[in-house]
Length: 274
Image (cartoon, rainbow, N blue to C red):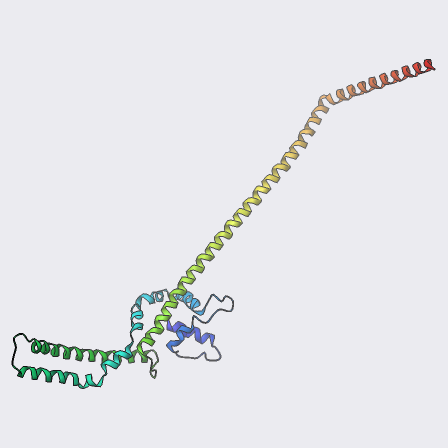
């Protein structure tokens, strides 16, 4: 993962500082602060995760492999060092005083009810062994931590363990949040695409229904015109149209003749009256 980060950094700084062979671990948490110029919701960390998903999917299990980092980041090592490196403890002054007191009580008159001598004897034995073991663990932890700093290129750093592990812990938290952001963006995109497909299908269906309705209307009007034409042709073939016209002509002639006769009668009556 660090190699991919270095490659991205060298590519972005090409021509300026693009030939770096490493970077400080504190720079990891600056990746999430590098935003896209197109979409401010997308950071360089999102892009890094997309590259890992495509080319190095096994690296995505990194948070589960480093599950002890949160606990390591909570340990304040400096107070522990201050207590364990107390000159009185390291010089054995406290242990010497306890042993002197134990020897003094042994020389006194022994009381069966007094449990000081057996209890303190066991305590000094156990505590001496525990302190020696704790001192060895402290030296081993300091040696391993120095080796870890050197491995990550922090040889001259005065970084404390809680600060060092806290950097990776913060990065892993941002890493997990960025993965969740990408999943949410993908779900939103899929939902938008699904909604767009549904809208396109509905629009196509409405257009098809409208076209079918128009087609039915045109077909109906054409059918009516065709029916009237067919009726006219049938009447012409059978001669009914001529019979109907002849009847109409006779009726119009009769109507005209009766109207003329009535007019003649009225003129005759008028002359008689004059």
